[in-house]
Length: 109
Image 1 (cartoon, one colour):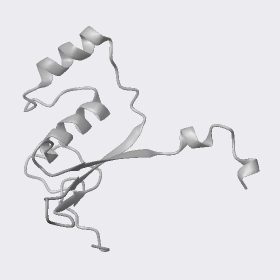
Image 2 (cartoon, rainbow, N blue to C red):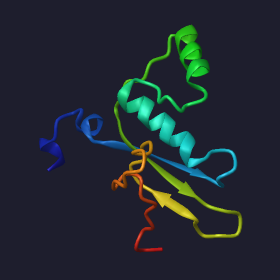
Image 3 (cartoon, helix red, strand yellow):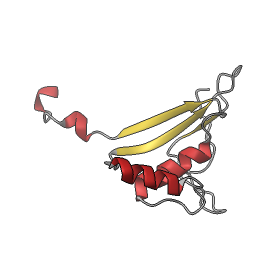
């Protein structure tokens, strides 16, 4: 029952973010870089913006709280219902296929 739930139960629930894009302004590789940095606190060696982002965050005193459980990616072209949907985005495993870097199409679409 809700009456038995602790007052901060909503704050303890896992939260995920869904990024929707046309694939032009925001690509999956950008989200992979963000997801890996968010979860590990370290930039990937292949992230071309790592120096600029690190400097900006240091100058602004910005830090992630790391409370987001996962990042999801939905790519939709202009005249398509959907093009690519991927859950729990992370960077490539350098040639290894893992459930986190497969392009996944939901069964309901």
